[in-house]
Length: 301
Image (cartoon, rainbow, N blue to C red; front, side, top):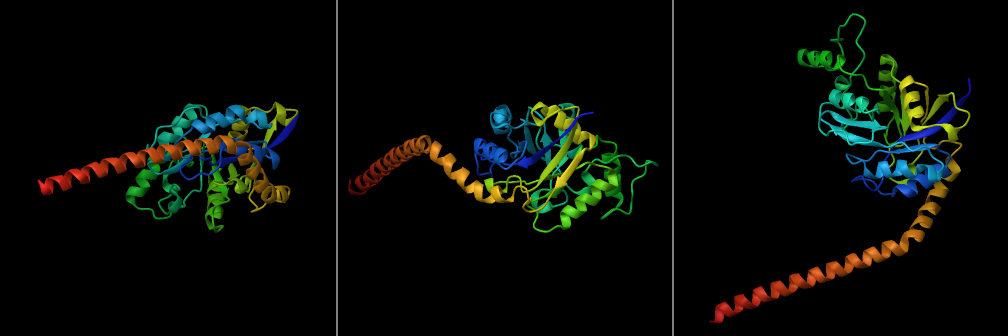
């Protein structure tokens, strides 16, 4: 049977995210240039630009896959392959179920890192053990935690664990994520979690697709099925060898070129905004001046 490998960065933020910086067009251009086959825009709790990126991805020779990083009641969760925004602030297991019901894959990003809203281990839905019992000796276990873990065990399982996140400053959390994924038989993925252009592709996942002759024939559904089936390999080096040269040197050039092409439009927008601000300031000044004059008159009459 024919088989092809695609490289995907499944966790990238655009300027539609409150903490992102780059437009999706520039991210797609950069991803294609450094050799990725797909990049999933996973902005925080908004999906508009991700859907648009998926729609125009083929213009850059990429596979279009929408997604979002949704805030749940227990931490962040990647919803990859969904066309709608999942409900926010719902329990983790409910959000996992929603994602799977809507055809997506649920991936746990930067697990256990609470400073970045990573989910706690006890809140990740896991397969039932053979004897149906929950390990009471797990980290931090007590009666309430054990009961909660038992309830989570009956919930739909996640589809994959982010076992390498390029933004983690130490390797401890990544190693712990790898151990957790191996223990429960979950596929592992690697992602850049990039918020700036130069970090896109710093970590990525290679996915084996069966039944396709070339990457051009691969669909988003093919990629999602492969993640579910666990045919993934992770590349979590800080600067992948085959991408390193273009990754850092090329990013600056592409960014400069992009803003040069779009500068006229942005300048006009900025000028319009500046005029509006001047007019608004003038109106406030006139209003304040009239108010002060009225106060002076009230003192002398």
